[in-house]
Image (cartoon, rainbow, N blue to C red; front, side):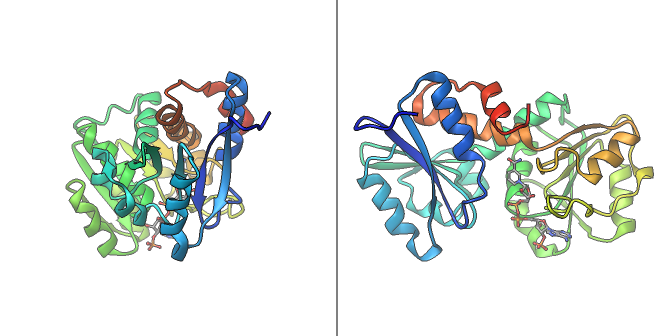
Amino acid sequence: MRIDGRTRLVGIIGWPVEHSCSPLMHNAAFQALGLNWCYLAMPVAAEQLVEAVRGLVALGFVGVNVTIPHKERVLGLADELDGAAAAIGAVNTLVFREGRIFGYNTDWLGVRATLNRIEAEPAGKKALVLGAGGSARAVIYALAQAKIGTILVAARRPQAVQALEELAAVEYVPWQELNLARAAESADLIINTTPLGMSPHIHLSPPLPPEVFNSSQKVFDLIYNPRETRLLACARSKGAVTIDGSLMLVEQGREAFRLWTGIEPPLEVMLTVLGLS
Ligand code: NAP
């Protein structure tokens, strides 16, 4: 990669950001397309978010991805928000244009692409969402957009589920084995948004026994490391169609790439560089 006086800059702000796959993914795409662009990972502490964003605008950055813990707070710094970002209440992509800050949420597009890939066709169906944190908001927005029939949300804290009601009608399922099993048995689509099973804790899993899965179900785990969590292995062993979070990761990046450059990135290159193809 050549960096010179004309290099256009984008990147990611968060705390921490060292673990982010996005620099690898975007820089590989820039290189494959011969674009003189560079994507940087920039750790920004919570108390310096406002100065950091102003600084990026002043330095002529084209835009940035935003990750934990800034996704919600950065909303207030945008001059304009797209409809999804406003509804979800989180921004994961900023675009700086003519001194103005535009905020987008592309996470839900990654969810939508994943549901399309497994032909989940949520309209009128019943989904069980495990977890009620940040990514659950994008999941529930995507399910509502796809006109899902019923959304059950299993979580440890009922208040967290209440907060999701502004996005769609949701039913709370207490995080106990029996309740989870009953809800899972009746669901067409099961989506894990908890970190249970993510590397290095690959022995963990939401407490769902193999009996609750069947071959007419689709099971989506947002985790992409490892590619097959214990949850997915268990569901697959009962014939359910399963998918991990790698397509979601790459699709949210693809949309950000398009917003910044106006160019379609090479999806295969992005998946390959992450070892996910
Ligand atoms: P988050 O905001 O911290 O939410 C995590 C949710 O999981 C919360 O509801 C939390 O409940 C629940 N949870 C955590 N530990 C639990 C446990 N031991 N038992 C029961 N529930 C538990 O995190 P997030 O940003 O939504 O991310 C969640 C996962 O999605 C991570 O693994 C992340 O890597 C993955 N992710 C993937 C993509 C992708 O592109 N594929 C994008 C975003 C996120 P409490 O509130 O009670 O703690």
